[in-house]
Structures are given as C-alpha cells and as structure tokens.
Amino acid sequence: MGCLSTLLLLFSLAFASFSSAEISSQVGICYGQLGNNLPIPKNSVDLIKGLKAKRVKIYDTNPQILEALKGTNLQVSVMVPNELINNISTNQTLADQWVKNNVVPFYPHTMIRYLLVGNEILSSPPNTTWFNLVPAIRKIRFSVKKFGLGKIKVGTPLAIDMLESSFPPSNGTFRSDISEKVMKPLLHFLNRTKSFFFIDVYPYFAWAAQPTVINLDYALLDSKNITVSDPGSGLVYTNLLDQMIDAVYFAMKRVGYPDVRLFIAETGWPNAGGMDQIGANIYNAATYNRNVIKKFTAKPPIGTPAKPGVVVPTLLFALYNENQKPGPGTERHFGLLYPNGTNVYGIDLSGKTPESEYKALPRARNNEPYKGKIWCVVGRNANASELGGAMSYACGQGNRTCDEIRPGGKCYNPNSLVSHANYAFSSYWSQFKSSGGTCYFNGLTIPTKKDPSYGSCKFPSVTL
Image (cartoon, rainbow, N blue to C red; front, side, top):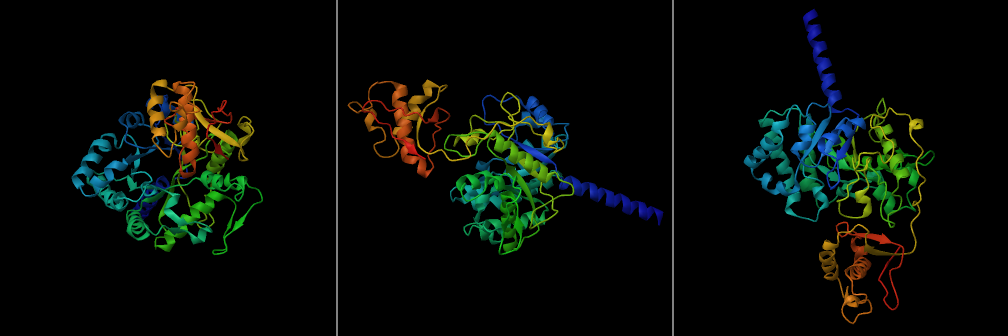
C-alpha cells in the first residue's frame, strides 16, 4: 500500500509539474528582427533575460538566435514561414526535412515549446493558403512526433480579423468565409492534440479606430469605474482586452470547441507613430503593457469574465523598435527597448517590480486626434540613391499624380530630386491614404504639418 501511495504521489506531482509548465502564467516577449541596427542575438538574449521574460517568440528559426537561447530557461516559439505552407500541406517529406533541419539540431538544449505554422495567414487576401493551413499544420505535427519532439505544441497565430462579429462578446462569430473550412478543422486539431489557439489581440487598433466611442482608460486596462455589460451573456467587462478575448471564446463555442486553451501570441501598444496616429505614445504604451503583465501574472489567475480563473499565456510585442517594418509609423514603435538596448520605459515582465519604483512617464500629448492638413516629404536621413525608384513608384500610381513636376508644370522648378520627390510622395498619399496608402516608402519619408507649397506650386495634402 505504501509503494502504491508513493507511486500515486509521484504521478500526481509529475502531472502537476507538467500542467504548470504547460500553462504557466509568466509573460514573454516577441523578438522581431526587422531592423538594421539591432543588437546581435547573444546580446539580445541577455536583454530578454534582463526584462525577466520566461518565453520568447521568433518569427523564423534563425540559427544564431536559437544557438544563443541554448541553456537558458526561456521557453521558445519558432515559426514556419508563410511561403512554405502550400508546399508542406501536400508533402510530408518536405515537412520532415524542415523540422529536421530547423528544429531537431537545437532540441532539447534550446527549450523549443511551440512551433507556429505561418503568421496571421487568414488576414491576407483570399487565397489557397487559407485552406492549406490546417493540412500543413497536421504534416508538421506528424514530423514533430516522428522526431520525438514530445514537448512541442503545434499551432498557428491568427489576428482578431478572423471574427466577423465581436461585439458584444457573446455575439463573437468567425468569418463565414473561413468558419467551416478552416476554423472548425483547426480547432478540432488543437483540441485533439491539446495545443493552444494562438491569437494576436491589439486593443490599440480597436480604440484608435473609434476613439470617441471607446474610452481610452478602458482600452489601457486602466479604468476605475467604466464597465460594459453584455446583454447576451449578462457578463460585465472592465477592459477592452477581456472583451476581445471573450469574443474569441464565444466564437469557438459557436462552432463546438469551447474548451481549447487560448494563448495570446501578440499584444502591445505603440510608443510613438505618425501625427495621424492617435494615442501612440510612451505613457500609453507603458500603462497598457504594465497592466497586461499585472493581469496575466496575477495569482490566483484572473482569467476573463467568460473564463474566470483560466490562465492565458501571453507574449508582448515587441522586444525592439524595428526601423525596417513597413506600414504606418506605429509599426516601427512597439518595442520595449530601443535598438541600442536601453528601455523605452521601465518594465518587468515578471510583474514583481512595484509601480512606485518606475520613473515618471512623459505626459501623453496625442490622445486627441490632430485636426488639420499634413503632407508627406523626404525624411532628413533618407538615402538619396533610393529616392528615384520610390518617386517612380509614386508617380506610376493613380491619376495624374506627378503632372505638376513634369517640364512646364507649376512645381517643376526647382528641378531637384528632393523637391520633386516631396511633391510625388504628398500627391500619392493624398490620393491613396483612404485606401491604405502610407507615408513610408521604405523609410524614406515622414509626415509633416509644415506646408511645402511655394508660389503657384500647391502640394496635395491629407486632411485629418
């Protein structure tokens, strides 16, 4: 009887250890690499440890980074690139080869625990990759088992745009174009393999799209007295992040998989951005990320109104401000650190540093929308050798975009590359901002409130 009791005790301890390791509430970091001025992997790993992270996600299987992570206690998430999904979905040999070449050499000394197949695949325009995603995931999982990589969970991170309805949360519904053919098979796989449903959730973008409708403190998890009631479920919400997470839970329940565990693969708030990007500042970024850490490291776990007490593993985006990320200015300013390794603001991913120990934050100055005209011009540090190609692209888009800088046009003189480029970029942005065009041009341009017009040469503008 004593031996049996000991055996049962050992089994229960092992199970408890396995369970806590699987669903640890410790917060991690997303280590993106889209910058030409970032520290080397070894130094980056030291910085990650300094932030007291327990998990790290990379967006590939960079061997230098995986080597630098060897021997650390950091749980690691790696990624199969989007462009391989179609081929892997029909080719087990290719899946085996990819896992053998990119994962096996580092396992188990690098604690690879999550293998993500693609990144936000369902956010791209409709294509065959959508429907090859789950077959590719199955092939990769087969390879993981074949090579004895038993501790690795396989999944894929999806953005919140997988939902066609998210408010109120009880109305959460997957998009009709993916619900049956992608979401159900995906959730079936995750449920069967006891993996996680990885989601990217950004209250910032929801708030910035409707800043007069959604309270900023509610979006920052900083509200003291604002609540939102869901008439369908009767649940009461105190922050926007819980609302968004529960919308996913309800969507899962609607297709028959209410109990698949969620894992927040990305969340964060930008610390800066263009003048047309409201609320992107250090104060808000620090407030949001500190509150996320406080929420998800709480003991006992808080969970959400729909799933109280449930642990939701979470990764903050991102380690660095990455100067080569395309898109609006916010995309290059999600980092907890500057590229030189210094903190954008004080933060401790373990949640153990009291708020009182952090330095005072700079006052937020752009929480109200800028109202007025802005133009898109060449940045101070732009590479002149790249301007010609970018200007040719801008002039090749739209209707008569660059007529005024052709010979005889009102803005032809002064006949200089920078002057013509300023006009071309402003004209392009004026035409295309409403349909997603940005003032970026591979980092060559910046938005400005200063009107570059002169004499009879009037530059097109964007009006906010």
